[in-house]
Image 1: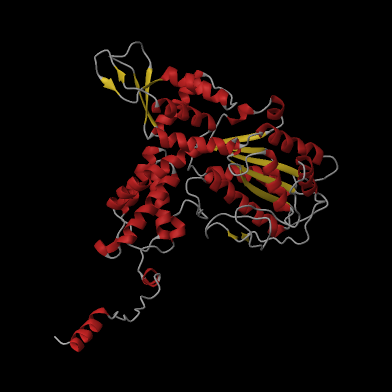
Image 2: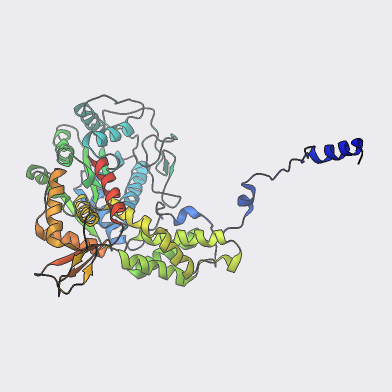
Length: 479
């Protein structure tokens, strides 16, 4: 081959190929045009509150009956709502408050409300600062003392503290839609676009205001006694020439014993009404899921057996509506990702797949919402489990991860003292063990044959390291 031919061949071989750029289009175009089984996914999330709360009419009636005295300028009794996670405590309280404030706004009655999640605001100073900032959005309270902020709250209740810039919109405040359109929301800044979650209004009166404070997870407050005593005794000050002014507490907790932390003088000033929300049963959860499915999914995309299965799983574990809703949501997402295959239906298969996916998430979510004393007991079990050698029975059989009830209680006492928490009696300790087993977090059995003496054997139901880590994060945040 001649030199010229070789040069031509080389140029053809070595010359870089110029590829025409191919425009794949926007990566979201396919997702945007994809068919989905959801009508409105938000309505099957745990954060959505329907305008009609099933199986809670009794409690809605009780709370609204107690709060109705505010419509006549009278302070009602404080209310404390108890119940396990997912029993509707927060949803009921928010729904009743939303209705109360809507009615008060329409009738120009001076009633105001504020919602505080005490897990996020876990001290008297943080709670009062948050409330007062909502009532006086144009003012800055950073650096002010707790005493000053407390006086600002009393000033607002007296009716002498009024923000002329505030507007009232009971249906959608601070950009938060009311019940039936996402979450039950009430805010403090009228039509402001600030972050979601609480309520307040702008009706001022020389005779004073009735202020209702919803303190969710109130047992998480570190200086609980100071907070409750200050708010209840504040009514004594408001009673001196301030007409119809008053401050009412609605406390929400899953710990029936949290008031044991209060001083006797604080307890005597509470004048409270208590109610306990029971867990939902399987049929109730089925009806709740049917209600949500009609709102969230397209017709004919969810099999009734799938709804019944999700409800049965949640009822068996704890009667937790959040668990049931989350299972159906995840099952729907699994079916939706599958697209047109098998008719894109939510069936029992999707629910069982969802159970595997969310089980660990639900467990760790449940742990974070346990009362602190129960968390300390569970933390003691996890700590001992990490360092426990297998137990050999008299028969020679080896048991791994087995703990003795007595040693767990001793470890609990040590950890409680370390964190400067009150040590509960052995009777309450046994109650906590029973509830932890009911949640499926631990297993217990009588010692029986092969173990010296009679005792209860305890075994952790999930990975000790992860449980220990979840509780440690919570303890650090709380202290």
